[in-house]
Every structure is written in structure tokens, then in C-alpha cells.
Length: 256
Image (cartoon, rainbow, N blue to C red; front, side):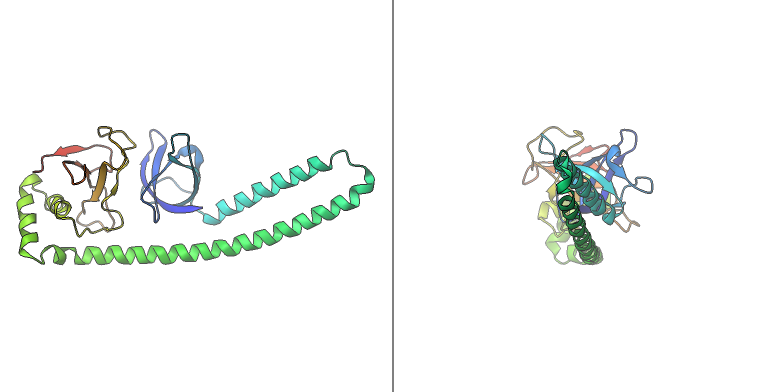
């Protein structure tokens, strides 16, 4: 069982991507695997199971807003399969072994009850752990946002870098992000900025995995990461792309 937030959702095509907690690789999901009690929205928190397909891509097998539901569904499927298997093996046995069969079924039920109790306990522990992690990540992001202007203006060299980049687009946040990329940070979201951009939509020219990296462009008045990103190619970067609509479209930037 994993958790994360919906990073991108294409309602017309019925697919999207999940931004996984504590993992840089996103997970693809299709509307047929979604079991949510409310409409699908970007930024929505979900729990899911996933597996890799024949192309080694991570795909969600079930997506829900209730963590316990996934765990209980898995236990239920396991119980039904085990019971069916026992019934098949017992087919054809004579009546003299019926007492022994009943005894085995009773032991199996007791075992399933114990497993269910343990699963519930593990679920509670997992929820507490996720809550602690989420609070810590939120605190880190808030601190980074609050200290970013001070960090950038600490030295004259950093101020000069930001000033030189202003002529690129004229947008203060975009040009400041470009300056941070060129000087190696510090970035407002250190756990996300600089991670691999997988180009799953195929909007950019095809390159080897790890060629593209993404960085957050802060949006004034928005408390979360927003929809603006700069995607660079090469390391160190030799090409820059800007998306303001969460990867739906890209514009190439002329950066020296």
C-alpha cells in the first residue's frame, strides 16, 4: 500500500499520474482502477497499490481515498481464495473425514481473525506514520518558502545572478528559478526540485531517462507548489522549457 497526491488528471482521456510520497517516480493510473467517493481532482490525497508492466512502468492497480479499504479488500480476496482452495481439496472425501475438515475450517477462521486484527493494528500505525511524515514535509516546505527571499539575497554574487536572469522572461519568479538552477540552489522544494522528469506525455523530444529534470516556479498567492515548472535538459542544463499548465504544454526558453 502506498500514498500520495494526484499530480495530473486528464478527464477527457481518463488517465493521470500520482505524486508518490517519499518517491521521485510518479505512478500512472487509469479511471477504471479508481474507487473514490468524490470526483477526481489534482492535489487530492489517495492511497493505492501498484505494479510494473512489461515496459517497467509503474501503474496503479487500485486507487482509493480510504487506506483501510485497500487493506480490507486484500484480506477479503485472500480469505475467499484460501477457502475455495480448501473446498476443492475436500471434494470427493468420504463422510468419515467430515469432522476433520470442519476442524480445519475452524482453525482457518481463527487464523483469519488474528490476521484481521493484526492488519487493523498495522493500518493504525501506518496512518500515524503518514500523518507524522506529512506534517514534517509541510513544515519543511513552509520553512523553505519563508526563508527563500533571505537566502537568495545573502550575497552580492547571488543577487547579481538573479539580476542578470531578469532579462530572460521578465517574470520575477521564473527568472529567479532559472538563476537558482544555474547556481545550484537553494531550492524552495528540495525534495522535489531537481528530480527526474519522465516525459510520459511525450510532449518533449525523446531522450534517455534522467536527461530531463524539473524545478518548481512559485506562483504568488498560492500556498502549494502550483502548476508552473521549468524542465531542463542535460546535466549541467543545456536547454530549458517552461510549462505553466502542469505539463499540458511547453515553451522553450532562450537561456545563455
